[in-house]
Image (cartoon, rainbow, N blue to C red; front, side, top):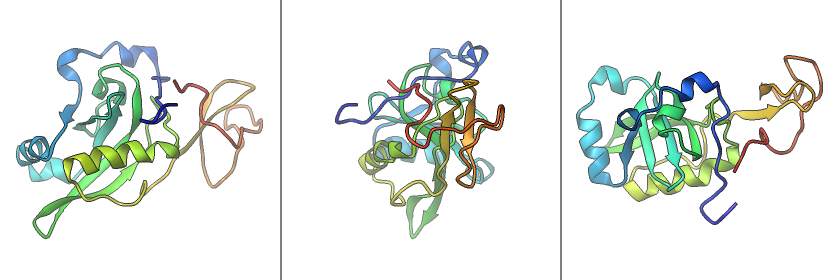
Amino acid sequence: MGARGQSYRYVGPAELKAFVQASSEGRSIRSSADFSTWVTALTSKELAEPFTFVVDDGGVLRLAPRRSEHVVCAGGGDVLSAGEMSFREESGRWVVDEVTNQSTGYCPDIGSWPAVAVALDRIGIHRPSGFTHEVIFRRCRSCRELNIVREQDFVCVFCGEDLPYEGTTGESG
């Protein structure tokens, strides 16, 4: 893990990674001008739903429609964070309304928040102090299945074994 944060490899189904094409990756948002161009082209219906996001391995925020696969949004590469994000306009400026690390394709730890914060700060979007909904991912040591930990119940839903309290999925770079 370097100064830029831990990176996460794609751990989801291989068939979804096959959909990755250079032309289908998420919209790179490197500046406030990029965000302004992107957001003004959206309809109110599109803005009513959260967006798929990744912070790519270079620290760039990429956005795509909600039902997009994170691996496609990332162009198949490693990410510093991934999840869903929604925006709202407040007093003439755009702010992040909600943001989560929910991405079963990458399973980013809640510690991936700083990469999201840096990417949003770079483009001048007001943000919360952390994920508004945190998801904890763990890989079972026994059956190797990925789990989402709910209500602090660190038990594998597939085989009933205890899940590790520390770490994420064991798939980080």
